[in-house]
Image (cartoon, rainbow, N blue to C red; front, side):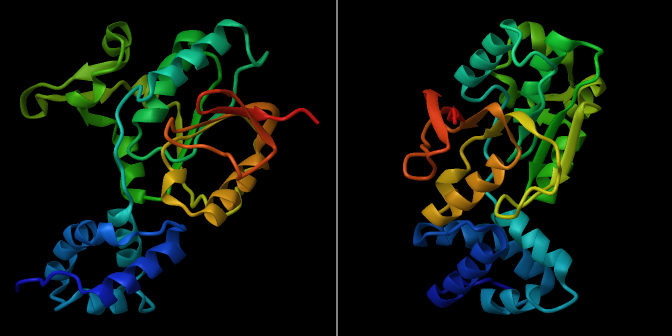
Length: 269
């Protein structure tokens, strides 16, 4: 069966579905992305067009395919120690003894796991065998499964300091040549769970630092405000929020003040 290019009406309907599920708006420039990622599912299910696929995933009883569609449409692009300046700042904070206890850190859109593993490497350097963990969440169960496995192409480790690479990563051999496996000592330190940023945070834990990088750019102003308000509920009074270097909270909230590029802290009352 040859799957035709997605029609404008089907794209609009799928875009509306995805916005309702994730809060992310898909612009018309994403038509080829939607077509490329969902077309293989149409072939597997022997559906003639994208409209039929949308009817299928919104039919009661097809929740697994519905979740898969959301997973496939979620943009995931990351690598270890991406935006190095944030990790440099985290090291500065830890050198200063911040926050006076083992910090609670949440990677709130962890994608395939490279970000929380980068955090975990630094935590392991400072806190060793003490009781610590890094919470990590994502909308995509597929990405969370990749994070739990901890197996990555070596190309994604190009920014990892050589000392940390040798200490916390195993080089693949044979069929895994060209890959690395994050050491089990770090994989056990990640607490992975599914979470939709548009929904309130159910955990009662308060965080000293939340990573929310390169995510807000996919949401409209209302979505950004909803997400930030949810995060403020679980951020410590002296806590930090990291966003992507191409992102800003201007006009989104007055509760956070910029302290460095893409680094915010709760404003003093």
